[in-house]
Every structure is written in structure tokens, then in C-alpha cells.
Length: 114
View 1: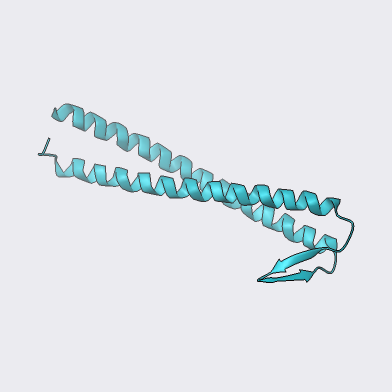
View 2 (view 1 turned 45 degrees about the vertical axis):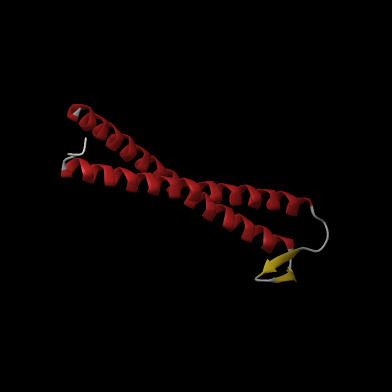
């Protein structure tokens, strides 16, 4: 077992790197999905409101000129999040395929060395 070929060592290193990338992308995607759900709830609550509307600008809470402008900002943010989530989803799928391929290759190589 101590005599692992350089090629196999390289594949194991790639496997570990892909595993880390996959974890990072999955975490990012989860965070974006949570932001999207929060933004959808915000949009829903905004549609129910009848009074003045305020929005965060940095550390300030400022009265919005009108509800429609805030609604369009929220809609724009939702669209941006959806695009990012789709991109992360594609990236995650590609990394999962690469992960599985490397895992199978390493398992075969380890099996043939024993």
C-alpha cells in the first residue's frame, strides 16, 4: 500500500480538491437558495402592506418613495439570485460527475494494487 504510483497520488489529490470544491459550491448554493426564499417572503409581505414602505440602505432605514420601486428592486434581486443558483447548480452537477469518475478510477486502481 505504501507504494502508490505517482499517477494514483495525483488522482487522489484531484479527488480531494474536487471534493472541497463540491462542498464549497453546495454551501454557496444553499445560501443563495435561503436568500431567495427570504426575498420571496419579503416580496409577499410587501404586496400585503398598505402603509409606508422602508428599505435598508447600508446601516440606515430609509422611507421608500413608492412601493412599486421597492417591489421592482426585489424582483430584480430575485432574478439575479435565480441566475446565480442555476449557474451553481450546473457547476455542482459537473463537479459531482467528476467526483464520481475520480472515485471509481481510484477504487479500481486501489483494488488492482492489493
